[in-house]
Image (cartoon, rainbow, N blue to C red; front, top):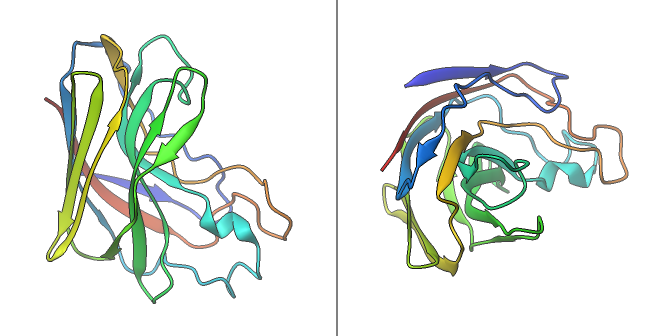
Length: 180
């Protein structure tokens, strides 16, 4: 696993991953752990709804496109209970329109394993942590030439409030990623 560290006040954290193309990837596998201590409550965010923005774990996107076109990935946001997060499968279409699965609640400090299989114009996502499970399939025209996208915590300041997309606390994510 590789360790990613996002520091307070960082915005749009972008690790430098090798952008090597992957021809006809059939999907990807991820394993990740969000270390305890990064979780933020709505009170921590002082009511700023940017707290609900999805943070990208990892996935695949069309090699020649922006990250928000023809992308399949896992993403998360903060859960309601201390040290919990909500995991979703996340898709962007050719025009940048996005859709997500139902949420799977997971806990910090424990391994989450996920998989996305791309075939027959569908993306099929599965993930689990202990008894918590995510299983979702959605239409998706997978690109033939892909590259890795994510890890990408941080986001835009698109809701009223004092914090926007900047990290409030230090976040450490351990992550493994491989194409299948």
